[in-house]
Length: 152
Image (tube, rainbow, N blue to C red; front, side):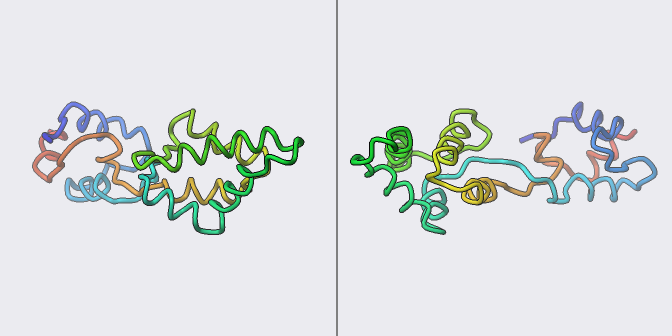
């Protein structure tokens, strides 16, 4: 992927995140752009989702709630858990905390008492990646020469 020079120039000139590009050498600016220190939510692919659900007994909690047919007071929890299990059991499924529907499903599992807020946090943590500012902006490959050109 080619470097988006317009985005790179705007990033360095405007410094919207206050990273301190001004007064830095080109090499230091490149270092700031490439430092992998930016948290970003990404999708949990199916395998990682299942491993994360298995940790702390989360999957078992959902399975127990899905099988609670005998208790009429748990109709909502049972329904939500059944939907979640159906979704999580699809081989091509994942969980994306940046998508409203996925957040709503996890929040419903928490609000019905099937999962705890700590369980929700564990899922979000598993979906959090650490990326560079260049990646966050979708700049493509950034090299020293590109920084020099953007600052010229």
